[in-house]
Length: 364
Image (cartoon, rainbow, N blue to C red; front, side, top):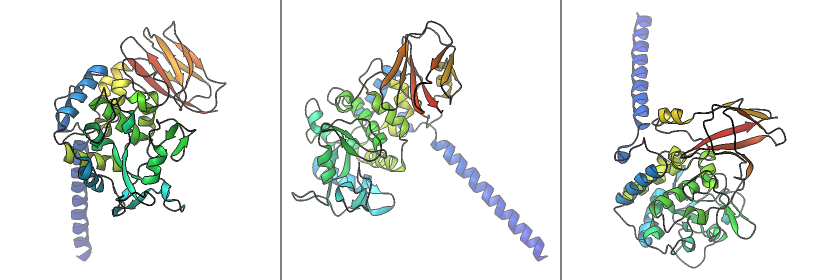
């Protein structure tokens, strides 16, 4: 009898577990759909048309304009909270709390907000799109007080970045030469998505090519540096970014679409392949992905099949540098990369009205 009762209890428990996971999966599936915020956008569109629709949306829903003081301070104390410690903020570009160097700290107590002239050991407000690089200067209103690109930052690190444009690199945040700045592996995707948002929201004042170093080869109609599209693909959206996006949405009324779905960047400007967070574009993407690539990974030779009147093909390294460029005159051809080092490369196939992108993995 006790055994029979145990069986009944076990069965009941299993039913509860199954029910729980069914509900969990339903919620998860629903959360992967397009949020209601984007109900006015036609996601069958792409390129310039989609860019304009998103720009109109994030502009019309930007209903609350924060003051630089105290508005942005108050926002950052909520939006930039360390997910692992609610008494701290995470510091953009930061990477190490244990090296004895305050400039490189990754987090800091909320209470250590800069209130005086000293920046050592304090955090302040970083304009990720440097104010002086705006056309005109961003100042401390409008774009200069838009929470989507203002972040908590160590005071000294903020000074190190200054108004240096962002450039390619690897590892931790650092100046590159005397005039450029690499934001660090953890932060490069965050930076890229902030710059994309700003370009849509303030297209004349915040031109992305002003603040991003390197070539522009992915986009055929716009000034979106390759480096930001590459970073968007390489550094996926973090929980912290989503936390910031929600807090800023609650404060300002508008969202950063590229945090909600990084694939929107590829849909607008082309570039490296990015997963569609909403599973909305798969049919459209399959229709546009006319050519096929084999083998991938490859030990040197990649074969491309099914091209339809492309204008040119470009092979780009992870730093955004074009390595090969040619105009194919047939539907099927080979790309010989046997003389190149192992690593990740990107191939763009330029058509008259769109760009098709492939990620190539060369393994020797």
